[in-house]
Length: 149
Image (cartoon, rainbow, N blue to C red; front, side):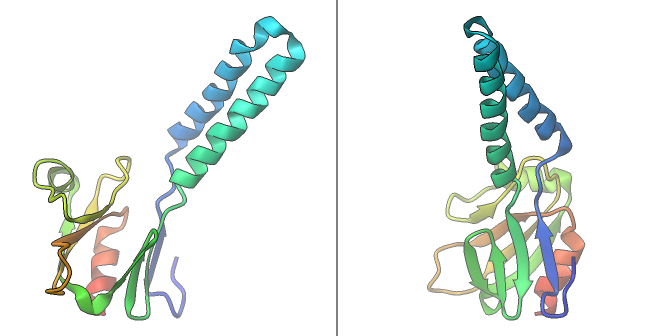
């Protein structure tokens, strides 16, 4: 979704299958309370469904934006001047950087259900973070927005 002041914006929403699981959590909570009667069963279903829906929605509400002179990824705000080379990662390379190639000092905003990613080096010598890893469904567009700035 592009705005005139936002060259890049993406929301890493949870996949549809997670919403099915959310519904099944509600069903399971209802079944657990079934021995106590119909009303507790309905309360368990609704309560379990609501709690699971809040968790699924909040996990899938993370946003990545390139705004003016900053990269905003979740709660982090990184000046674009602190970013160096930007690398688009295909699913295989993204998995490698999430696992055995990962540096524990890196800033990683990852979602396992998003197979592709972008990795940008941090050039600020005062910052011990070696790179930023961002899961994204549109790695080329994000890399272009980061490189343009």
